[in-house]
Structures are given as structure tokens and as C-alpha cells.
Image (cartoon, rainbow, N blue to C red; front, side, top):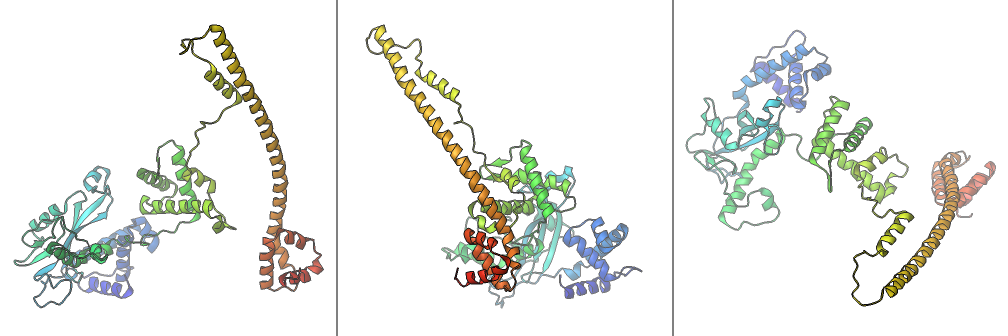
Length: 483
């Protein structure tokens, strides 16, 4: 809400609603408290801290402004006017006598545990189903809040028409409704089983029959109620509910994920995490970060997706993180890494020998398929075992000796290389500070020299061996490609 709108609202509640300023609270502060609680869905103690008022004062003036706004129903709700015969509006000229559009929207609410089944909608969320009617120029005509999220749109519309002060539709006029409502006197719905949504036509598709053409015009006009719903749900759309996470919140989030996965619960799936995982993380964060307002969707789900993307980048393109700190890396390896090890191929020499014996040993009830003497069979088996056993053991021994010698050589080489690389890494850390000590170098020359030496280990080592009084000339020669 901008400042001009805020001033108009303050004047309306003061002049038309007869709201009075108290000794310590002016009209504008009372309205600000009312809007702050509604827009940000904060509790009394939060508003008390924000406005430096007592909880009783916050509650009292919030209810005063609320009662005044409710009494301003006739000023805030617009009287419907049908589309005239001479209308030139490209969206509405097809619907002569139409008063506007009607639809239901779901708004998240907090209810007692015993009432949650009644308020749980088809998506599993706890909401209230609010019926709203609006004019073609996006002005509210009628609003009926309070119905449970499990109630169907048609049932709520029927309730609105049967109330004493309910929705009235003058004879010969009608409202545009979607297929969730039935066609009847006063209400015009689209054709079922035909293409309807605007995106279908915006992508270049052409209407193929009269029903689709009607649906296209119907969708273009009824879109006015969809736009009003998007304004009510300010958290919809890309970036509308974006949250900036700080280091403490990231740390608590990673701790919660690790604790949950280590607890033995099977929250992991082949494509990531099961839906209930985010709810479990939200429960943990509600304890470790009270009053943070972090929700499973979209806050936790979006942040986990970002952390996984950054963690994956380290493996594919680590240059992005060069010189930067990547917190919680090893914890994220436990969270996002896939455990594919099964130990199936791990064997000791005793296991190999036992396996060979089992393969070579024939069963006692073995019946040969050819005729031979027992002596020949025994000789052949002994010869087979001896011929297969000796080469295998010899090859196994030779392979073990070769692998052992290779490991020793690799260990020695690694120690030497690692020692040299560690020394060079220490020089790289000191390079920038040492270069700044060279008297006479400009900042540009200093940065250029550091960049060149960091790519050439040999020149970097030589730089540290040059005397202090000669380093300036040495660097200048380096930059002029005279070295």
C-alpha cells in the first residue's frame, strides 16, 4: 500500500466510519497497527514490540479499526452494473448483461487440531474457501469468508444465495463462473471437455470449433477474478515469497537435515527427498529457531534446492568457489550424497582360497557321463587341481608383490609432491602481501604481477629468492617480458 492510499483509508475510517483518536494513539497509528497485523500475519506480542505499545492497547485498537472497516461495507463494496449493449471492451462486449465474475479462493488458516480435517482441502493444506464476486474493473461486489477448505465451490455459492443478506442476481443478468459451478439462471459457465485456459491460445493454438471460441472469450473475461486472487495471495509468483537466509539459519537447517537422516527415518528417495521430509525439518527448525516463520514450502524446499545446486557445482565446476568458503560441505555430502557401496567385491585371500576350494570340490553323488576307471578319474582330478591351483597361487603372489611395490612407490612420490605443493601453497598465500611491499609498484602493476606469478610456480619461487632492493627491477622486467 502506498502513502496516498493509506491517507485515503485513514480519512475514510475517520469521517465515514467515525473512528476516534485516543489520547495517546492517533488515527494513522491505529490503522497502521491494523494493516501490519493483517498483512504480515503477526501475533500480538510481535506487534507490541514493533509499535512499543502494550498488548492490551494493540488488541483494543485492532478490533476498533476492524469493526469500523466491517461497517464500511457499502462504501468498500461496489454496486454491480451490467455490461451495456454499446460496450466496446474487447473482453466484455461479448457478454451483454454480465455483472462480473465469481470464483472461490483458498487462504491458509490456523485452526484447532480437532478442526483440521474439516479445513483440509484437496491439496492437503489447511485453508478456508472464500467466495468472491467482482466487477469487470476489479472491484469487489460480494465476499463470503469462513467456509472450510474441504467444502465444494458450488455448495458455498448455494449458501451465499440462500442467506438473508446474501448474493443477489437481478433478473436477466448473470455472472461468469468456471466449470466448478453449474450452468443455471444467473450464472454462465464454460463448455466442459473443451480447451479453456488462456495459455492455450497465447501459445499460438487456433480455435477449431464454436465451443472453443466461446471458451476463449469466456476465459479472457473471467480472468479478472483470477488477477484479483493473485493480488490477495501476495506470496504467489516467482520471487514473491523469497527469503534471505543468514549463516545461523543455514547452520540450523543443515543440522536438522543431518539429524533427521541419521535418526533412521527413510526420507530419501531415488529423486531426492520424500514430501514428509520437509515437514520434519520445519518441526525441528520451529524448536531451534523459534518465531523465524520458516515454512516447509516454499522456504525450506527452495533453500535445500539451492544448497544442493551449490554442492553439485563443487564437483562439476569448482572454479566458482575458488578462494571462497563453502560452509557445511561435509555435512551436505551426507545429506545429498548417494550411498552406492555394498561391499560385494571385498575379499581377503582366505575368502578367495575358500571360494576356489568350493568350486573345485565335486559333490559325492556326482555321476560321470562317460565310462572310465576309478584310477583314471582320481588321477585326472588330482592333475586338474594341481594344474589349476599352482598357477593361480603363483599369479596371486606375483600380483600382490607388484601391487605392494607400486603402493610404496606411489606413497613416496605422494609425500614428495604433497610436500612441494604444500610449500608452494604457502608461497601463494604470501605472494600478494610480499608484492605490496615492493616500493615503486602501482596497484595495477602489483595485481598484474601477482596474477602472472600465481600461474607460474617456478617464477614465483624465484621472486621470493630475489633481494628486496632488486625486486622492483625484477618485477618491471617481468611485466615487460624481459625475464
